[in-house]
Length: 195
Image 1: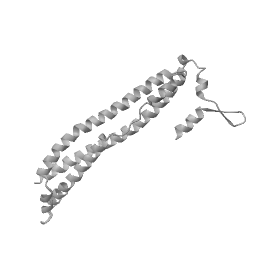
Image 2: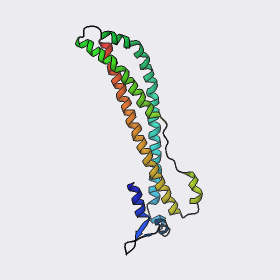
Image 3: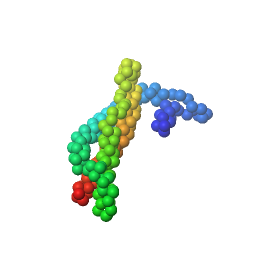
């Protein structure tokens, strides 16, 4: 929202009497020598940042894809070693502290594995990512180079911001899945130790 106001300020100029006279920065830009600006550097930066964010997305999806088969192996092991009927049968006898720890760890294994699966699925779920709108190329071909570069830079900037936000959420979900996996393994180890 704030960037929209900034853009509006960039695209308008105040008259002496205080009223706004709409005069596009693009029209002013046509008089500027590109060689004397940093626009090409900014263009290179936004292209580079775009590639970085795309690579982050791919990296997170690859890591999650690697952990899912490992989680499948853990699930098979869980079904054999940590059976809920065995955990529930422990609740019918007199409880010692060790029995309580075993019951607690046996009960916590399944919610932890479920939490891990949900977080991994959220990590690899396909979410729409904005891309450069290629349909606007036709209308931009006839404009001045500085004008076109400016439009491309702002478009890429918005795309990078959107990708970065989604990648941060994916990274958070992936980190949570690792916490869930760690908790699952800890509870399995505790349960098996007291078996």
